[in-house]
Figure (cartoon, helix red, strand yellow):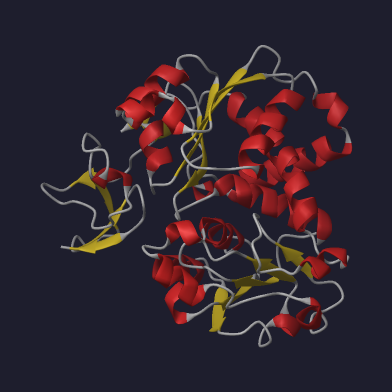
Length: 360
């Protein structure tokens, strides 16, 4: 299936050279924001936020306003026709006819891909369930480039909810494409990194190890990426409470780390980083959120720069085969083609929307 526009659904759909160009533009914007104040005059960005957001939504809105553009959209689907049962297809089709670029956040995996199938403008994935969050990854890469001066040769610790953490999924996929990066995953067995992400890391020639405590990893890290245990991704409060407070970064644990290690977090923070850590010069999460505006300004400019045809669905539909993931958009919106990728083995398929694997 083809689209007239180029969309950002998964950062890995773009070559590394494209990422580096965007990061360079983000740095230039940070150093001289006034120079870019009129880049998007006369342009309209629509933000469709089907689940709560503070930083991502406001960061996108600020980015467009600082580029001289305008914004429309909703941040509560209850106040839109979605509440009447309107499909993503219809919402996207209508709103994209009003806007030059569309940003969507949705609680269901693959929703941004679904929106891109029928949108009449470029679509940016601002987070689809526990699946991917490519614009947070661009923010993270810009932060690493500015604060660590490099994107390769890093040992990155990722801690917390790694099974549902779309930010860590996207960042792992990106950093494993760059040279000599190593990952240390710190989580409980129930929250460990999904197999498909670990397979991507290995396929890209990077390495990883898995540990259960922060103490085991602290002195090895160039970067510690903390995540919150996400209550909204659990099926019951009991399951959430069993995992909550497992990992808490405090002043004592920070004493185990190198002096040049930095702490990142996509935010919001709940209780996984104590407020005393905020005063540590290695705490980079508030600065990271600030850099998000520059990364998204660069992204908007590059997405609006040209309308390049892109192949939205590259797989194929297998008669009667459906994705087994209840959190996949294809199990919520029946009209969508049930498209799967195959690596040559037709008995093992991968859903094009949520990346879940299926044996047939």
